[in-house]
Amino acid sequence: MTDAGAADAADSDAPEDLTDLYREYGDDRLPPGQRETDRFPVLSKSGTPAWDPETFEFEVWGAVENPLGYSLSAFRDLPAATQRQDFHCVTGWSKFDCTFTGVEFGEIVDRAGVHDDADHVLFHALDGYTTNLSLEACAREGVLFAYGFDGDDLPADHGGPIRVVTPHKYAYKGAKWVSGVEFLTDKALGYWEKRGYSDTANPWNEERYS
Image: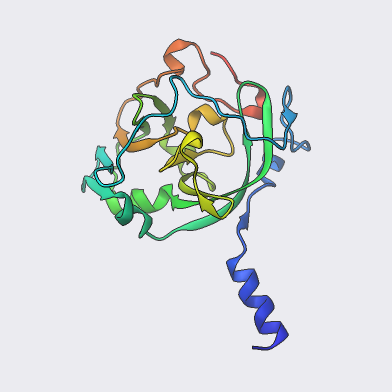
């Protein structure tokens, strides 16, 4: 292989860089009220749940033509994307340049045949956690069902085997240990949203609480 060919191959393996999405909201990559950290703190509502890779299933249901169910291995066989994103926690820290690998939200939409009148989703997790987003917000670039982080499997304490990542929202909108997604024709609030957290969760507008 020539040097140029090797460079092209390396570029094809490089993650898609989405770290400039902040430009839609202003000139500052770090949202207001946030501090940058090199660490990746672990937060959850009730600790890391137990799960069995032999029985784990990712499900899709609700306002769809084709309800779906995938074992973990079948899910990981779906077309995947690797993206470099920033990660913003509502508690006030941000971690730049996280590399996530997973299935893009649009891939699930296409396979499920989402009804025209669906306008919201509710993500469900193994620990009983839920969080909601509009279908429009989920269609944004960067929304992944991630199972890989920085070249390895996503660690269990960070949401493995699968978590949602939402780089344009505070991270509580990205359910850890996600077991499925429900497509809705009417909005339903999730766990933290019912407890006063913002439904829209835009970090650059500091939409932390409703």
